[in-house]
Every structure is written in structure tokens, then in C-alpha cells.
Image (cartoon, rainbow, N blue to C red; front, side, top):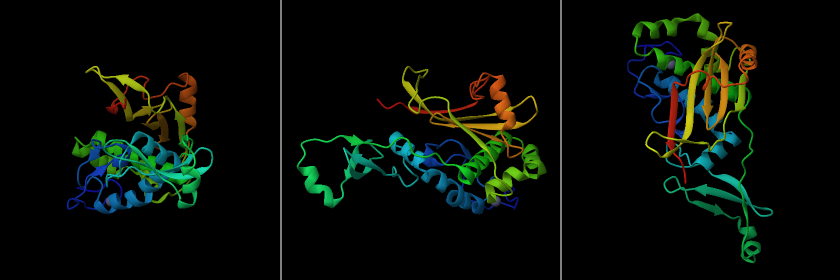
Length: 268
Ligand SMILES: [Zn+2]
């Protein structure tokens, strides 16, 4: 068995690779041991996933949706007690309850007020540049591998396909060039759907591939309603923009099929 990124022999690798980090609510979408070697797995966690997870908008999303890290902690964010007292906000990973740490110099001012309004930030910056494109390149390559894993011959072809080297290299090193990612919101982060069992469900993440009329392959990944699209074969998204124009700005996740949908119980 060989690693799909560095191609070294990886039969002795011990860790499964989460295609999306566990900190984004992913427990099911994994590649078996050795598909990504331990060394690449560890490197991606530190150099590619962590910077994405720490971006303001992603941290806020993890806080608001109550998504714990692998260590079981929901990241804290900085909020404001109306009008101007900064507080560090914590969310309990188990029951979702909120608590706030108030800087000591503001104690007396707060204690003098009977009540206050808590302002929680929502509009932080999404990851951009190489933080975003390397993360998407990694997720796209691993999602392709997940589709091929049932067939050892196809997986071997995928590992050796030189056409995928730019994507692989971009994920591994941010090289050789800038790589565009198309980003837009396609539904609200807390959109609800009615599940087959009659309970309300919330989509955490979903993904699919799109082959354009120009034979380019795009990978689209939605995370709590934000759709990220990346070209598998090269660094531009011109073909995706043309496809959107020709398809009334529809999402490839919903036109015409949707193969990867992961939900969690909706909060009341
Ligand atoms: Zn490797």
C-alpha cells in the first residue's frame, strides 16, 4: 500500500485519515490506515487543517454550532457585553451551555448594572489564500481516493496519475502556484430539513464532483452552508464560473445529484 500524497510504502501506518477534520463534525468520512501515511496525516493536521480551523469565521462557526475538537473542547471566541466590555465566551461541549470570562478591571462596572446584552460575533473572515486552497486541495484529493478505494487498480492509477500532481503538490506544499477557490453561501448555516424519521436535521457538510462540458473536474464541498469549489486539474475556476452562468447559479451539490450528505440532530 502507498500513500496517495507522497507515494511511499505506507502499510505500517497506524492512523485513519479524516477527510474533513473531526473539529468540523466529521466522524464518518475517513480513509483507512495507510491511504494517507502517518507522516502526511500529521503534517496536514498541523500545517493545513489547523490554520483553516483557526480562521475567525471557522472558529465562530465551530463555537455557534457547538463542534468540539478531537480533545473535546469547543473553541472560545471573544464577545462583547453591551456596549463595550470584551468577554471570552466558552461553550460546554456536552450540554451547549455558555459561560463568559470577564476581565477583572471590568468587574465593578458590570456588577453595578442589573442586566446586559451579550453580543456574539458572526461575521469573521473566512480563510483565504493558501490556507483555504491547500485545505480544499487536500479534501478534494482525499474525496477522490474515497471514491476509488473499493478498486485497488483504480487507486494505483490515481496515485500515479501525473495530471493530479499539481493538486497534490498544492495540498502538500502550497506549490507551485496560487490556486483559486470559489466561495459562496448556498444556504443558511442553521437551515433545517425534515428527516425520514420526522425529526429536524441540520446539514453539517456535503460534497460532490462536477464534470463541466469542457471536461474539467471540480470538487464542491459545503460546510454549514458555505460552498467551496476547486478545480482538480488546475488553479483557475473559469470553467466553474461558466457552468454557474449556464446553470442559473445552481450548486452542483443540488444539480443534479447529491452523493455525500452528513447531518446531525438540529438544535431546538
Ligand atoms: Zn505520505
